Image (cartoon, rainbow, N blue to C red; front, side):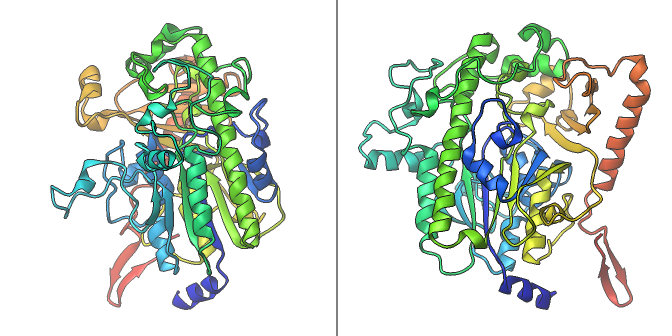
Length: 513
């Protein structure tokens, strides 16, 4: 293996992993969105491979990123919520990159809560879930408090940039939904700041490098400068996938009846108070237009990065992965954010560009998962993960080779509340019963709650997921079929850390498929 690795790394490319937080998989003009324009992403897709059915493994941020970084499903990495520690025994893409001879460098954040075992109780790293994934060198941190960016803004003359009030549009009140622009310009966004830091670092490199640029946007608060703030109108875009009103939506399942009223408006519009359920159809449309503008703002900054790679001569030597951690409901089902079971929270973009492999402009309609990114990087760099992985390498698609592949998407969501116990009290459940798993193919979507009623959607007749047919006797056989599929999937992906190892007279033998 050492010889193989040295051969591979002798011709190793640069690696650029870009994540844009909370970006919906349908919000790409390359994927056929009716109004969102993403010319820089489209340009990348024309030179790479666009995966049109790519899904997050979990939500919210920490669980989703744990799957992305470790190649494991939530059922194995066990990062259940923001703040759930990532078990230190698992390998990840940054540690693997180090074994390949890189110094993996982070711009942004990874939302990784460290394993507290073996750490002192007073260690400040144990006071936040916004830690750094083990293995990364942090060149420019930018967690959600954004203090580094705020300091940069003050250095540019924005003396009032002392907290996140800077996101309130000029002339608007705190908590007001407004398409007006904030005080900072298109060249002073968080995205522009982080892109600039990466470009400056890029100019310092003289050998193969590995960088992870982790953008916060288009994550809320929903606010964006000119010209992006008015680039889209509230009536732009497809029809919302939702029931007639909030009440009808909540009545479709006990989980929605609990979760929807608990969604806080302040999580989406800075300074807002009260429940999301108080917002009208027009409010959701106005917010979605701003969200679309935030996507175009990130796309513009990606163009700066593409140009910098070309200017430094690195473009033809750089393997690029563009994706997100999870998606955004954007008003579908009368909600915002991520979580639950609807596709809007989990369908995310993925484009991989490898200048060394195959013709450009490929499109993949097979179901792929965030867990596939780590094994893809392992294969491209000629290294092996130190433990079993749930994901599979996507390199056969990148190289336009045939591959036997999964026929369904799978994701999980855990809604336990360890600190306050609110969900547990509401449902009368234990924490380990507050979870769901989804298996979804082109025909049906089955949602299995551990201790709440299951759901089944006929996606061909009901693509907006409005009609739960789980209790319909006509669908009893299909419900059983998909429940068995989900059970078999979970059985195949039980933790395999040592299951592929056997002790023999000649010592341990390990054979991973």
